[in-house]
Image 1 (cartoon, rainbow, N blue to C red):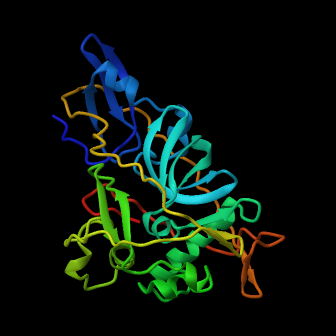
Image 2: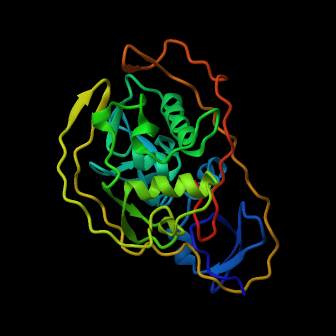
Image 3: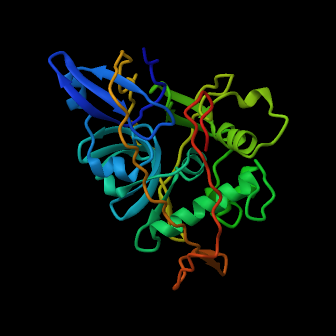
Length: 305
């Protein structure tokens, strides 16, 4: 009997039966099999392209999207065929999977209030910002690791665009599918201690980037929309609340064979330059300037950044 999964994962139909379909997990470290109804299989179907280009399902994932000629950060609330529903600070966006790029939680959280004009920014440049942030938190590529948000974002965005450590974030817990609220600082601390390997780890860090041991109430705040140095601060809009996004498969007994695992190709990150106190995309990118560390994403109780 297979145990119930604790987060979304890809699986492939191996056999169709009168009572439903048999599935086998794709991309896992061990053999995992289930049986689900035909109705569930049809409702949860995804394209082969998505499976081939993502290590795990986009559902509940932190992402950067291109929408209305801007890049924004958020989290995927739903996937439906050729469309992904992404929740951002300024509302819900439905975009094609080709315009949805997975990132890691801490970078999406730190940059979630900002909108980057696509006329001035490219995806490799946004990815390079992500890498600079991770290097400063994890202490990689010659950086001293820190969990100070001002230091992490110094010279990356203007000071007035840096989120407050106590600012609350609404997020979808990738394990439960429930909406949770936590301060920005908790997500940064989790990455700093858990992924940076800093010891001893305070009890306040807990076992998840989005669920601190103590619950905090949302802080009331206001924000304005403006464009500064080719980056806009997003105006909070109607958030799309997803209550109880169910696990993708029910655990049932099966005895079919294991399918071949799929592995996507890694994406290269590219640097940008900063001139005269402004963040300005370069005229010539140099993709080999930065050696990227390998970051893992665990499916255990503690999510990895």
